[in-house]
Image 1 (tube, each protein chain N blue to C red):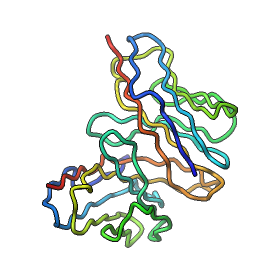
Image 2 (image 1 turned 90 degrees about the vertical axis):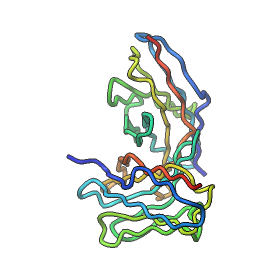
Image 3 (image 1 turned 90 degrees about the horizontal axis):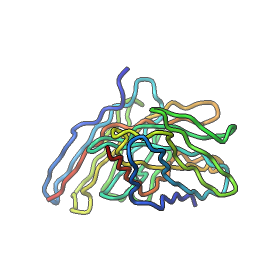
Length: 115
Length: 116
């Protein structure tokens, strides 16, 4: 079965500093990985995805993520955090080998960027 | 370009009542998904349609829940005899099926249900 772990409930970073939000996954086949962001009382906004190819994926708003197959990780990164990046971030995975379309989400990591 | 829309945005109901939510996907998206999100959790998959066919259902989708997509466009999710445990945010997403089936799901703003 597919699963995602986001080990940190909250990440605190000062504006201008780099940020990392961690995600590890478990699938039996090839992973299809996503990051979404959720602002208060809003739905999820797509940030980026990894299917295959270059392990460093670039997405919206200056975010990027690094796929590491040996560590089964897909950490979200940004070189310089903004206060407006403060939100709830979700990692999700789909197992490409199962044929199922459902995404399995982690429990989310709250990012707090202080001025 | 309009995104996924959901109505109503908020619904308060009494236990035992039936509720229905509507989702309008992004135009020409042939896949539509329903998820449920409770406080402090990530979204959990409920069901998925390709065009009008319901192809996947989670065991979370009890017999009180029913979803339809009659013409392959908008979808409705009905909950009968609501229970307090049904209180959650119900999220709809849509995507366009690609030849490699590596489509991206785009989410609507959600319908927040409160069962009193």
